[in-house]
Image 1: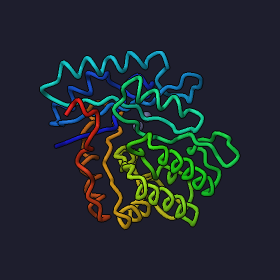
Image 2: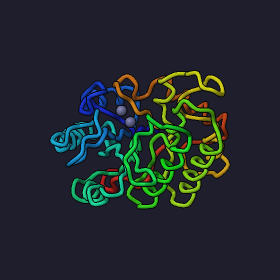
Image 3: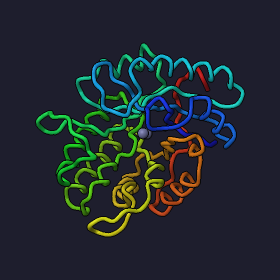
Image 4: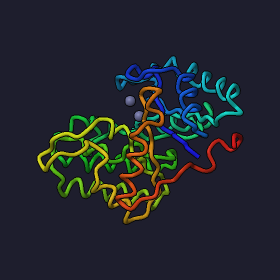
Length: 265
Ligand SMILES: [Zn+2]
Ligand SMILES: [Zn+2]
């Protein structure tokens, strides 16, 4: 069965399409499962280009309505792609327990560095920042709050050559996946972002082969996430290209995730 657990909507202010547009596109593309994971709002902090906090309930309500309407066509899940910042522990717990999210997708763009300062991995100053980034991701994986990590190799978008720091960051995250069972997502949106020049040659910003070769060696669970920001991307050519890429690297991804929202399957 075709399943995608990483889906945005126009609520995050940098994607197109309503919840309904994505459901219709997914049904048309033959998906059996669609998980909504728009960029999460935080009650007291604005990371920028995210859903406003007052749209959280309208977002969840829209998915609930579509779940009923499309019940014979597709299974829908409610989630958020969310930054892991340790002080928001009770917010994450509340999203799962009170708001009824089916899973949380850790999408770490911002992370606390070793002195607790919140940094953006898009603005890494050197490859050393990737080690702090990986430590934050691993700490999140250890909480048991997150079912998956979106683009765990996002740090390779920095304009640097692969080195020992990226090696260490990769090893930390892969080791944590082996230990915790948190699923690592091969992000198809990285393929959509194309090939760029790097000091060690042209490549995608992410996914990065050397990260995934470690994941293959460790035999950790991997899933492909569309990370669609337009309805037509829900299952586009990048999804099959991502699968072929994983095969080349010796990884067979999970088709679907068992045991989500136990009342639905
Ligand atoms: Zn996005
Ligand atoms: Zn995303």
